[in-house]
Length: 445
Image (cartoon, rainbow, N blue to C red; front, top):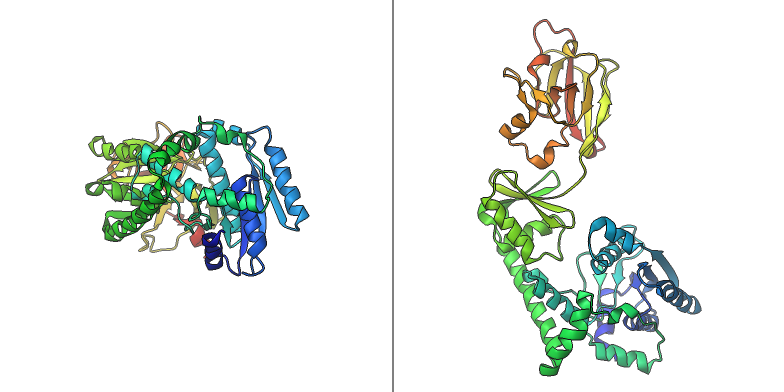
């Protein structure tokens, strides 16, 4: 029994430190039992991870059951609690979805902290079939049809993925493995449970091998998705400022999925998101679409740009033209480096601006833009700052993060871009300042 699972464990977990995700249910307790039986043979060091989602009244009891089981067998136990109902109120997502994201965050932290080489879950063949159907019913691309992988790129290992639910149940019975029952597993209000209890049984009645066939098709879809990715034009994308831009002539589903993947969104991308993105092509410039999970798509000058939404900056730092050099921490990971400039005053470096310190009013501050800001470009007339940003094709998503040297509503310096005609350097300038806006990572290289 469990030949497929043990073979995969030998292939992917041999000699590694492993974190086992154990809820106390039948599948995860079978997983723990399998690792207890084969860890020594494959030189595996493992510990158990248990997440209490704070949803069910019996959740604490189930966590205690797992902890006691581990203590009796000398297995290291790591338990953590997450308030999923509170997170749902904040995110607007359902409990099922929010719990999924919470677990992913916990697993990622374990891997990033190098507490484990891989995180192992008890997902099996039926789980995979349910995932494929869930994605299909919501509308998805090839990656959605691909379901789960035995070893995903984010370090999740699923040794039961080629094992049937019936085989796991038989293993539990044969080895008299104790487990707890999650009462919410019977609640068909959850989408996955509805597929599990209402849809799949009817499919299996007519097509007994359906689960295996669905999983096999998922494997074909994964291979097809890889082939499609290899055929995509690389010049259709550009990555800058933490965002991914896709040229408008490539707004087809495979390119949209690929752009979102470059942003780090690899799962739960559905047809509605693709439609929202494609509709932007016929909208006015700077039109935006909310794709969910904090991701926004915006039409920007011949492209659609995907980025993660963030709160506007509230930068406000008083500036006095003395005590140089100065380093000012600005929003979005920038450092403003200000120092006296030496003649010749006009630098060759594109990232450096020079301006007259003697022309600065007394009450200047570094801040981000506000309604009513006005700017007089070098050699030009006064205009609204918003109009300047539009003419210079500064994306709307970046405008709130540009550091500005201001006096009330007068913008005197736009860091990294231009100075106002009000502070230009002339032959009469006695104190001249230089300004560089550099990334924090560059400052620490």
